[in-house]
Length: 200
Length: 227
Image 1: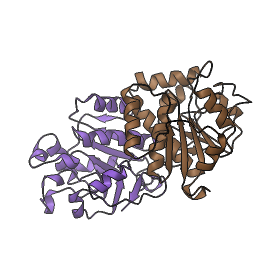
Image 2: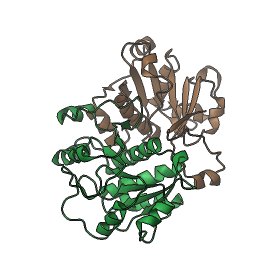
Image 3: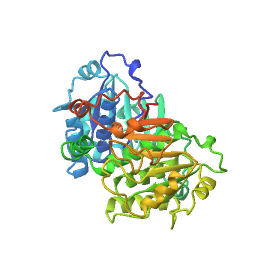
Image 4: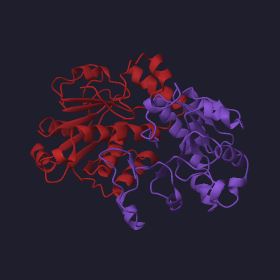
């Protein structure tokens, strides 16, 4: 379970009256994390809506989808290309599209390419899970990439996180055993107390 | 007891939660509640040493998850797990603990005094809400020893050996109870200092269907202190 940190957007700080969030989920692992995140957001009293155009056949991911559906989380059948509609309807977008999986070329495949094209133009904050979608494909820089407001690195920050210039960077996924951290030369993260998220 | 079992069934069959998912969230809640009530700095033993006693079923599984998270939170858990189901879920949880250098005792401390010396807290993860009938060995002896322990005991879901609805006046009297999903009837007989609610995964529709009337969890916390 990877609950997203609503520390970045506490319920009372959201501009719209309803705490609506759009969760864009890609076809693989990053998308599955997005589904779990949406479910926890719902139990935290946010109102997530999911856009999950290309569904993973993995039984675990299918179960995550069922769990969300049974919690009355709506699934959009299409993503408006009119960006203003998204800006008006939601307080923020959770980017769980490609994460660390995007390699050279995949960000260009549908439907991820279309999602990213739209996300590049939204004015509401974007929260990226693990790696901003499209960044893993290599430095495009400039206007080509999405610019998330918040990055939630999972387990450990990835190389591309160095380019992150947004407002808040969190580390989550407090499950890496010490032995493994040492083996990979990861510095020990300072999670406060029993929190599963830490601001970097 | 029947309601608790019915809710569980629905979570698995209708909502398609896996046992792994719910057990992970349950175990994490237990570790979090323990960290709130007994922070490492509060231990009088030189290290924040915790003995986690795991039973033969899902309550034991919750204990294994709890032990793992306690280790991540800076405690020094030790597990006693005498009866292990040969199912991948429990084998996996055991491996995860062992790979995190959590020791598994080959035998249970013979005297309550030994436990009081070595550990600052005992986690009772022996029997849960599905428990019925007589207590089989080795758990009868274990519970007798635990009843004489003076360090605090934190029970997961139901104090082990208690009737799930009526309690057990001459049984284990834990200092802490972590009720999972919703408090069971037995919780009315709980006289310890800390009662927490954990297992924050019951969808609103299910809460309504069973009229759980759960109080609100604070913010994004996975536990709620009831007393």
